[in-house]
Length: 298
Image (cartoon, rainbow, N blue to C red; front, top):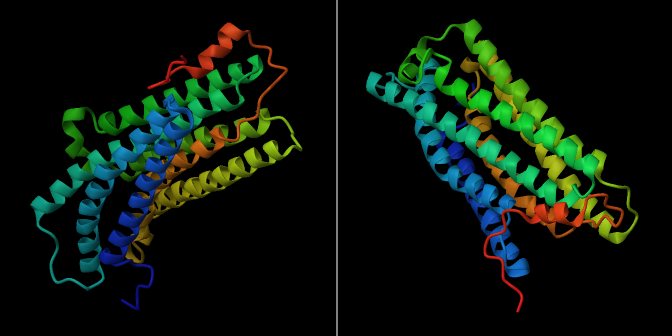
């Protein structure tokens, strides 16, 4: 294995994937517990975060099953194995990969929805901010629809997903490039929106919020770099002979998105109030939409 230092063994890949998945689940559970103990209510951002974390479980299991077959195929190509996986295993792995692709995008866009809903409660107390939020949310929903439908229809119809096994290089390049561009544009909007909207504050409260937001934005940048690396590897055929890092990037990207969604709950505890809000009280009450388990006052 010294000849191929960038080929990760399956035990190492499984250990990293399971560790990050458990960390995402732990962060989400911590967020939910602290949110309930603090306010005795859940908002929409908590629901989206919990959804992303829950989907991490089948995604991680399915991806590791598919990765085992991919690893054996690469091990055969470099001479570590004497035979290829059976045709039945390869076909099952492909169907598993299609299912995991669905989970992949559901996790990522549940995480994005977490950010959008928490932005609504944190920094959308002025009408201009709300208008921008609606535009970004509409684009996010549109991009999700395009990506989600393309998973099933790119090869003709949902009943012909097996045809994707023989997808041409040009078609695969267009699909992967489209996914990457839409995902990166969406994430860029999510990153820039709070930076453009939040007022400059020199108070300790403002510094805390900026610290939390900065940490989340750094993680978002890491998530984006994983997307670029994953897409570049898929579009560079020669890399498949020398590294299987794509298996690591693919399994980590949605898990990190779920971790980001969980960490975004910290920003809710550092919320800045806007005394100069130009939104009427009746409209501002909509900020609290999606409350669950709200304790009524006596």
